[in-house]
View (cartoon, rainbow, N blue to C red):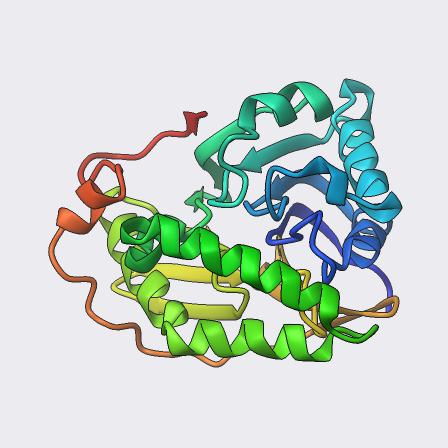
Length: 269
């Protein structure tokens, strides 16, 4: 199938530095697709340890820097994820692109917002130390896992389901978008693709690049499409719509350090 051409390409959760990162496949998408805007939707890194980056990881970063060259006429945006925190200023200089806490743009008369999604994950927000210990333990499991890392990827999926991240992030994102007069909101963080519409607001999740089925999103004249990458083939598929849990009171935004009212604008890190 021919590589897609689009206005905007979004991908998230590449987790450079992780043993299960599929940076080579993510790079293949960057090289083969045609797009006017690229949004790296958070958790591009696994942690702050650059010593864990391998050759494929550095090639991915090198390509990001090339794409940011003004001669390419591609707008490249990095949205900070929870794993990227502490790297924003470094990465902005290293690859020559702006880093945002949230990024807002308009296309076809609709207001779009890209935000990583950890802001709507209360477990991460309230248990930073436990989350960090879990990340270190998971890194060790990856090293002990066999070559294909099947067990590590299975654990990642189970963790997402156990914490019910999909429904929690979706519910928080939809409420947040509605309060800021956003038509479409895009998140990562959960490592699972999703598409939900509620009260006139559309929520999409890009999935991740550490699973056996890496995925990303394109936005074009035909609308928003969730795509899978599989060895050079690009598969479009409809996502199962799930009804998100109620978002609760707007104090969720205060806990996450987010504004709960008003029309949103982009916020630089």
